[in-house]
Amino acid sequence: MVTSPRAGKFRHPITVQRATKTRDAAGGEVLTWATHASLRAEYVPGAGTEGASADGGELRKGTLSATFRVRYSATAAALGTEDRISYSGSTWDIQSIAEEANVFRTLAITATRRAE
Image (cartoon, rainbow, N blue to C red; front, side, top):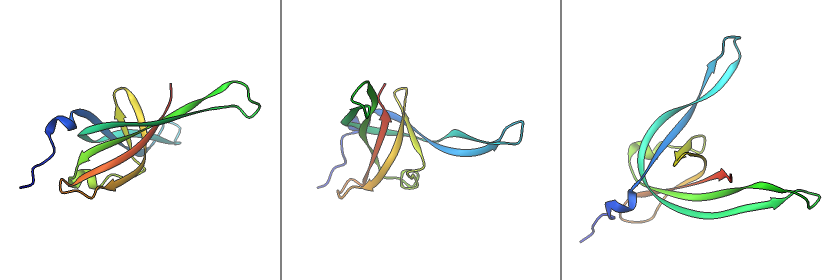
């Protein structure tokens, strides 16, 4: 008998945002982000990076990566790398989305954000 993953794993609320282009008062194009979907996810932190400037001096800001695992749905399946995730006050750029090979039908969304 196959059981679904425990609901407690998907306890982190995430908001998926999609870019839309609008016009400002001067007629110029402005990129704005609007909520596309609200999902529950399992948050799995990944590695971070940090580097020095080319001359070996001051440290540059690095990046953090994470995987957001969500249950498969038509909404989740329609997400793309042009979308982004808002989670716990930070914005994450989606790098990849993969359907996981398991009986539970989950999607693994890999995303990065700039380190603060």
